[in-house]
Image 1: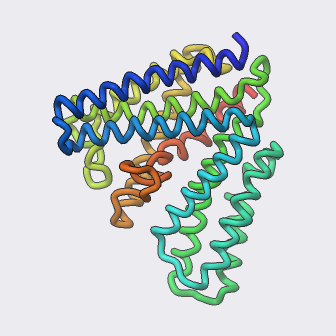
Image 2: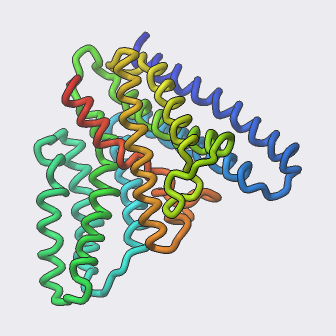
Length: 313
């Protein structure tokens, strides 16, 4: 099967699953909820709707190849960073540092990714930018809550730009006998991690009793975690044919990114609780902001990238 045929087959299968899921959601809304507000069913339908948006958007970017995908994730990073920093404490003295983050650091990271300069894009933000931004902040001459303000901008860049940029960075990997298929690695990462998120929610609603972190995320349960990760790991193993991995390697890789995805969701939920908000934003109607959809992917992407690069590239 050619790379193009594999891509078409994958997206056809995803489309079929989403059609079935949408029909199930509409049926539940009409029969169980009787078209009235219902928290669980409405949340499920919102997740399905978000999936449609993600699949169509990523699928459209795939048509433009490497440049299209990198531009897509650059825009995603922009909106995610805006959501993150909107909820943080800033002062007028931070404007230069914020402008540097949005209009220099963010585009520079993606230019480096596009160029495939691994030796620089892998350390640009965690090393050089982490040193540069506090210097910019210091020259502003405002010391009130200086450490907090500088750290929040650094953390926003690390999560929303550095981690997210590892998704399109998968396109730069040179993997033997896997030429022209790297787009499918992005599909594998997003499908497996996002499926785990949805399946954890479903298993938690069906069987969840023992809360995992009630203070941080009251909806997360041990039953949901174990059931969701197990099913998404099995899904990852079943999708081995779109990866350079064999079935058991795909399963182990899926388990690793599902675990990191869960931890990412937990950490990002803790930040939201600290900020006193339920969602990061309102970009996705009925289901929060960009970071609400990306919280699991941002932690999983660097791990997936580096494991793939170390063992297969």
